[in-house]
Length: 217
Length: 217
DNA sequence: GTCTATAGGTAGATAGAC
DNA sequence: GTCTATCTACCTATAGAC
Image 1 (cartoon, rainbow over the protein chains, first blue to last red):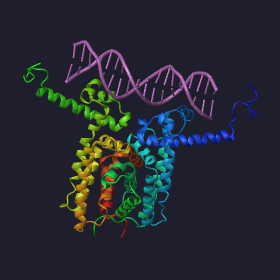
Image 2: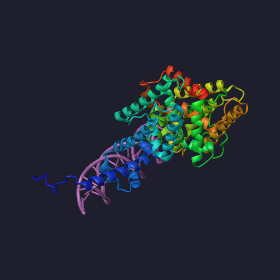
Image 3: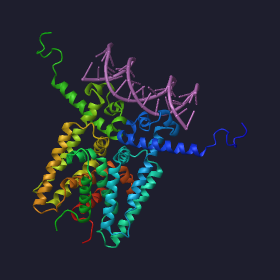
Image 4: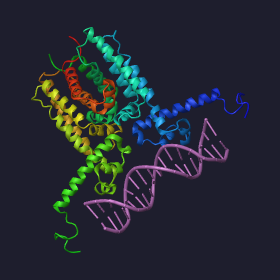
C-alpha cells in the first residue's frame, strides 16, 4: 500500500509489457479489419475476430473495452493510406502525370487489401455513424488539399474549368469501385479474380477517359 | 376429405385472399428494403421491419419463411430499375445524348431512393453471397447489352477506342457514389443534404469529363 | 497479462389460440 | 389469415481463478 514507485510494486509498465501490448493490439486490429470488412459491424463476431487473431475472446476485451471501440479503431490506418495516395496530387506536377499516378496508387491500395478497403464502404453505406469527429476532420483536410490542387491547375489553364469537388468524387468512385464492387466486376469480366492485367486495363480506361474524354473530335 | 374442388372446401384461395396477400407482401418488402439498406443484413431486425410495415412480427414470417428469403426478395425491384436506366443506352442514339440521359437517370434513381440504392452496395460489399443465380444473370444480361452499344459506337467512330466494360464500371461508379457515399459527399460539400442544384453539378461534371476529358488541348 | 465459465440480454423462429 | 406468447440459440461483456 506504500511503495507504488518501486520497480517491483503493483505493475509499473515495463518495456516488455509495452511491446506485448503493442503486438497484441496490432494483431487484434488486423483481425478486426478483416472480419468487420467481410461481415459489417453487426455481422462481425468478437469470437471470430479472436480466432483470426489467435487469441482467446476475453483477451480482445482486455485491449478493447467494447465492440464499438474496436470497430472505430480500424478506420485510422485506412484513412492514412488514402491520405498518402491523395498527397500524390501536387500542383507542381503536370495533371496528366499526377492523375495517372494517383489512380494507379488508389487501384493498388484496393487490390492489395480489398477487405480493408471495403471496411469504409461498409461503414459509409450504413450512414457513417461510427466515423469520429477526428475521422471526418481527416477526410475534410485531405480532400480540401486536393481540391486546391485542382483549382491551381485550372488557374494555370492546365485543366478545363470543372467543379473540383465533383471531379474528386469521380476519381474516388472510379477507383474504389474495383474494391467495393469486386463481385460485380468479376461477374461482368467473367473471371474469378482480377489479375494485374485487369488492373492495367482499369488504369488505362480511367486515365484515358478522365484526361481526354471519350468523344472523337 | 372428398370435395376439395368445391368453393367452400378447406381454403381454395379466393380473389380477396390473393389481394390481401399481394398487398401485405408489398408492404413487407418495402419496409424490408428500407431496414436492410440502413442496417445491413445482420444489423436489420425482423421486429423493426414488422414495425415499419405496421404488422406483427409473426405476420412477416407468415409471408417470408426466413430472414434470408426476405432479404433476397428485396433485390429484384432494384435491379429492374437499373435495367430501365441502362436501356437508355441505345446504339442509334448519339453518345453525347445517350450518356447524358443515362447519367441523369441513374443519379435520379439514387436521389429518389438512396436507401434502396444502398441495399445493393451493402450486399456487394459483403461479397454478394445472397445474390441469386437469377440476379447475376440479370446483371450479366443488361451489362452485356450496354457493352454492345459502346462497341457499336466505337465501330461507328463515334467514341474513342476504350475497354467498354471498364467504361461501364466508371459510369456506374460515378453515379452510384452519390447514393453509396452520401455521408462523405455531404461532408466534403459541407451540406446536410444534397439539393437539386448539387445533382445538376454532379451531372455536368460527370458528363463533361466523360465526354471531353479534363485536359486543355 | 491470460483465459474459462457464465451472466444477461436479445433475436430468429414457432406453437397455437382466435 | 392474424397475432400473442414463448422457445431456443447465440452473442456481448464480465467475474474471477491462474
